[in-house]
Length: 487
Image 1 (cartoon, helix red, strand yellow):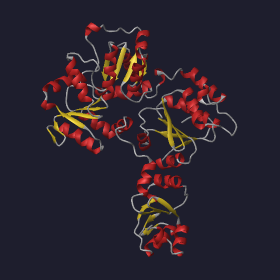
Image 2 (tube, helix red, strand yellow):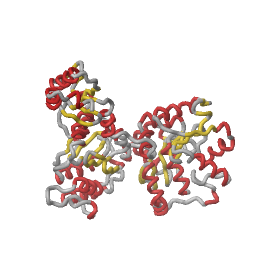
Image 3 (cartoon, helix red, strand yellow):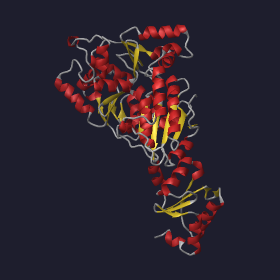
Image 4 (tube, one colour):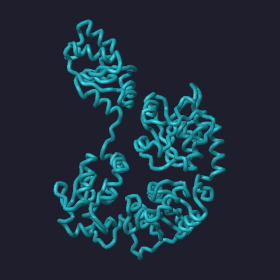
């Protein structure tokens, strides 16, 4: 993948990334894909930045080749950047925005050299003149990285023409999973609700019905996920962008500026926030039920006695995710059962809601669990707390009163120092737990930073570090080891 003269390192393993991240040096991580032109353009800026900030690690990950790393940082589109400082994520950037990238890097990296200002973002300046020139040049060549359809590789002229005809078939065109009446994913449903709330006429295409269109449009638009929303032939973006534009009022302005017709209120078109055909009392009651719990499941039967296989499937998924949830048996109240279908614009059960937002039915929940998307949403909404490396290390250290982090196992030590500590503990009759640091590089590298102790073995007592091999042997020789581990 092309870049500048800077020092950008390609990450091939999660352990490699974890080690650099825990080094304490600022780290900038670029997720890219070989088919994405925007990734290549942004890589030029990224590489140039690496020369302006030589004391910062600039790392590159091919998102589809390293799914474990991509899933950990919830990467759903490229280019995507993650910024680390002191081993922790401090910022993220999605999309091709050179100016934002330059300023975010300057903010995280701080000073280039002692006493030399890095022109941070709060001064409204990019990281340096060379970066500014790069940003300006790329802007001239590529606009704002909107799609350049004619140059997409791997698409024949017939397919390009077909895609453009579909995009131009309606002033507002949505490529989604399913249909407006039966969306097949929660993100498609959200965009449908937004368009209804904006009261615009729109066309749709179900990308699940034509794999050639589905895969071709990803390349044609330089946008790897669905749904995709277009206005007068221009790609606006996916679900997150549509939500942000809708909430800020920008989407309404775009439709107005492009002369998109607004449907009159007499048409009775509305989104989930203003469902039609429901009286005020019922709508209020449904909202109360939906918000009864952060995670709310409307199902047939009860969690311990589901009345249908689909409801049972969602209950099992929530239990596997270790999520506390409440449920409502729609078989006990036909008014709620029928009313919720109208209120949510979702015609079947079960229906899963998180923080008042409809996620979908059993198929969507299962798909989201498999992809890791469900856990990401639960974490982002504060439903479950993602275990940090520090949390994991504390848990391991406290898993036994006397805990030894060693190379190998007590019965099969992989280094002489570990073997000596095992023998010393056994000679003193001390019971202990152990962890083989050779089996987990994240723990191995993380524990060095956590304990401020660079070597192994490491012996802990009641969560406190005693020391390494030399200290343990010294305590034994002085007759103090057993007393130290039983205070």
